[in-house]
Length: 275
Image (cartoon, rainbow, N blue to C red; front, top):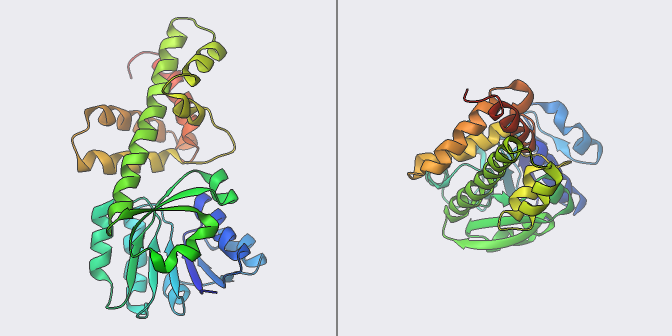
């Protein structure tokens, strides 16, 4: 079994790393906050003191980090440690430009696969993620199999690009549902009736995600993802969506909470009139 170094144990990363450990892979983990690794260490993973230590003997390096800045810091620490033949599977949502910059930094014989995921923490725990993989995927498909279904998206960077498109649609849809509920509130309609009617229409999936429980996609991460999209193309509707999420994330109680909390915040504050 391939030796895996897994870097980044947030809500998604911890669940994904556990799937790989349960599949029998020798697993070394690193996280900026080491305490988050304790459940995995108790289950048999090895805790590394630094990213460089984590990747030194790895066949496959997997990163699941908060954004481009975190990925850049990890790259600074590990690039010199990667052996020829190592695969780096970058699963964060960072956009294709960052993936191309990372690829340019890697030494000869180190292969980069961009493979961000579609799905939240429930799908990660169940091994039911959608994995959008660009680049030389064949060598790591067996490693990725415990995490979900791999879709080959094309050349390097295409997985990261498609993930931006997918997240833009999801986050835009959730924000639109929030505004529809603001209108329903203003009109004095029964919430359950409105939600049922919306769920039966084209926005059905977004309705389910807007009111989801027991899953996690942090509002601050939604800000990061929508900002990546609006920096890539002119998207006037998504610029308005970005403002919604930015205002929600300005509340510390909402920033790390799931986007369902952002929906509630949009409803509460819109009811008070323009901010």
